[in-house]
Image 1 (cartoon, rainbow, N blue to C red):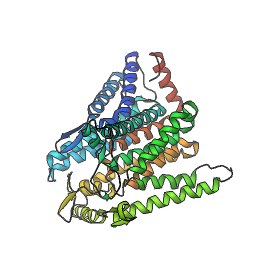
Image 2: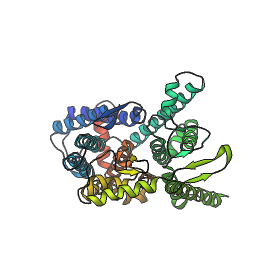
Image 3: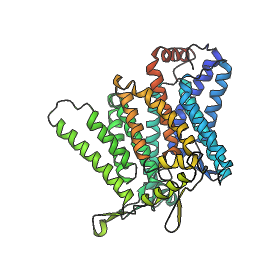
Image 4: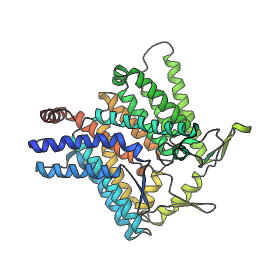
Length: 428
């Protein structure tokens, strides 16, 4: 909904349906990753049909209301243009079918993020829906583990754990839950941690048992992943230690220093394990990493140097390591320019930059903007070691950032949306 537009009774009903659709999408997104649908060499999942439906609902509502301004949609327009650029990159690339599938997916994700913002749903509801989805993902994970422990549904246990990868020697398989890899689960849980911190005062007041129990389960699972996303977790802990409000209670200073030290240890240790082969412990409890990121990054850098402006085109593999083994770039900062050149990287990066700016100018107004910026910072740091532009939850996070920046900058507009929706039977 845009400021100053005329809303018909039908338009209010359509917008309410859109609000419910975006909330449902946020709640179902993680578990929907359990159903993988290969399309053109890329991976879709069961949430993508719902994404298409909410985009269609938003477009119908725009047409019915008869007016739409660019306004808050500028970041997502740039990201949609990035998606179109990715699709046409198959013209000069080596994988035209894959480029079309990836570009279509990026465009749909950008339009879906725009639909979330345009719907006018309260950011609190979207964050709560995200937290419900995270709880569902954890229940899916531990339900599968429990089924395997009692000898039932062994295929489900194999679906929720990961027995390969760069980390070896652990006395347990790394959890991945409904996702394809522990790094993706870890990234999702790191962002969830930041969102939980934002909503913590309200959740602790309303549902203290669920808040503390869910928080402990989240933290424990995140530690079990041994994921590259620990870089983002280290950043979050460091940011909390530096800018959090610790008060003057006895021991607060020591606790703050401890949190900061733990963040630095996670950051440095994880980054070192990605770059160099490491072995920790000894005997049956020896944990080792293969340190292949250096090889991957060097190879992916050559792809960028081959075509720095246009990129080599969307490709499932951008790097090669001894073996030979083909990999993606394992880095946001090599994946985007390597495949889509400086043009594609600037389109996506400028869209994200606008959202960051809109949050940053409001960061002094409360924990909401600071928490969202911390979540984006965690994603940015993890992007050093992972191609996070492919993670659907990152696009949903960008949408929530757009909601928070818009609604806090225009409270009257947000209140008007809620009033109109209430007239149609309740808040969505």
